[in-house]
Amino acid sequence: MKHYDFAGKLKILWEKACVRYAQGLRDAGAFFAADELAFLSSNGLTAQHLYDYAEDFTGGGEPAWETALAIELVRRDYFLNVQGGRASGVVLDETTLPAKTDAVQGIEWLPRIIPKARAKLRGELPASLMYCCGGDRRFFKTHDIHPAEFLALIWRHEHGDAAVVDWVVRRSKGS
Image (cartoon, rainbow, N blue to C red):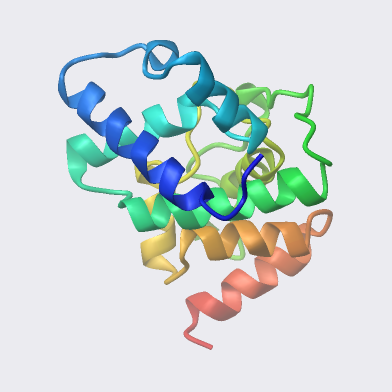
């Protein structure tokens, strides 16, 4: 595995995904060749991750490449340094997520995005969910939080929802 050129190789695949999506291809599994899939897998990513970015970027202009890269750098770091380069065998059951309208300390979406971000960090999101989807982006914009910053926060407080909530409340108030 080569580390130095990770971002450059990932950008090539991100661009390829955007082109393929714009051309009408809708099968994430058909976006990449075997060696490209191996590169993604060796870095804790899947074709679905890039498909989701391509779908949203092509349809609405975000998340931009820089945001996708920042998110995936956090995920990759966790994958390589915490998970030892081994994928989790767990997949989040989407039905266990809090409702989109659930709130904690008056902040909607926060109860939902915490376990969703943990699943993203660990590589446990099902193909049906995207970290940094439109609803997530609305939450991030409302509370002035970069998606990668939130993912790093989740890593720092991997088992502590209260610390995450307190941090978001402070950020939301402009502290």
